[in-house]
Image 1 (cartoon, rainbow, N blue to C red):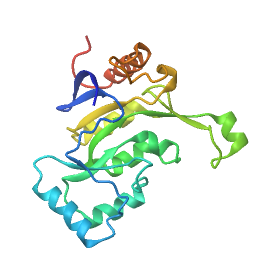
Image 2 (cartoon, rainbow, N blue to C red; image 1 turned 45 degrees about the vertical axis):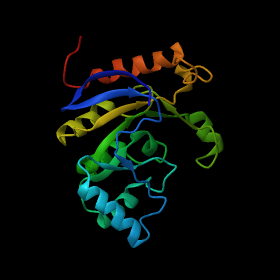
Image 3 (cartoon, rainbow, N blue to C red; image 1 turned 180 degrees about the vertical axis):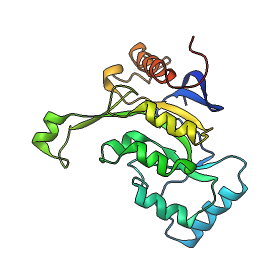
Image 4 (cartoon, rainbow, N blue to C red; image 1 turned 180 degrees about the horizontal axis):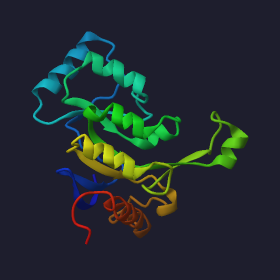
Length: 208
């Protein structure tokens, strides 16, 4: 994990700027297994009940835990609140699921957050449809469709105390292989800096 800067606090939890491989979980339990066997289910429950930290279920597209209906089933199987979501609102936008309402509905199970935005490119979507390619892209926070003041307000009202990681996948604020080599490319750093400036507006704490 490459941490660029730590800024401010979200109700006691830190906002971190980190590369996209960052994790704030003691164990990322994806639902590739879909908790389909009692052995897997029992192990997740055991970790959740004995860990002094938290166990997160990523909401990435690479897992099966991508939609609220699945999360409801998972949490019915593992009710312990040490098991929750590594919530990424950007993945909901491109599925046309309201990230604000979803965050509210699952506010007591959000244990970590990826701060990433999504832009829908309407002229492309109009030609290729939702099954086509190139009609959406990830952006740094503030340059997509997510209403960040509302989203962060949900977290604050829920008493969220977990980590918020800026997950940088915005090619407009990057350079080829910008996260490789001995030092991060300045273009990529600029993306993190702009994301931090934007998010700071809505976080309690110092403004200087």
